[in-house]
Length: 120
Image 1: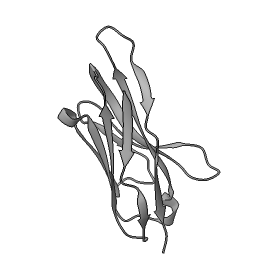
Image 2: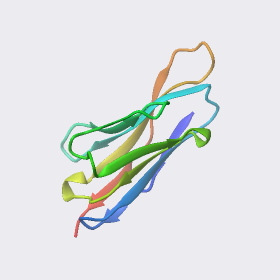
Image 3: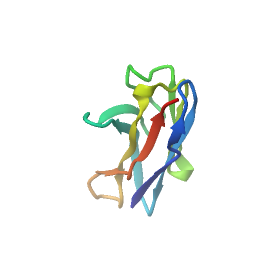
């Protein structure tokens, strides 16, 4: 099982980006998924999470600007980021809690990260 994040890049302040994270491999159950970010010199922080049922939670700093969504048949989540600010610059990581096979314990998987740079 692997998580593949994509969609990062360089964008000007006020611009938009859409990140994607796809889970590849055979998975029995895909539970909560989310996006985290880590800026240089700072700890990794939660950006947004979404449950299998679609309930969402956001960090205060991105509320009303970012939207997390998921496509369950595709085992993919998205992060639509609007009105980007320089302080949003970070490596963005996706995370998934899943069960590979029936009866096994649930485990947490991380993607490799995608860099978002907001700069003029």
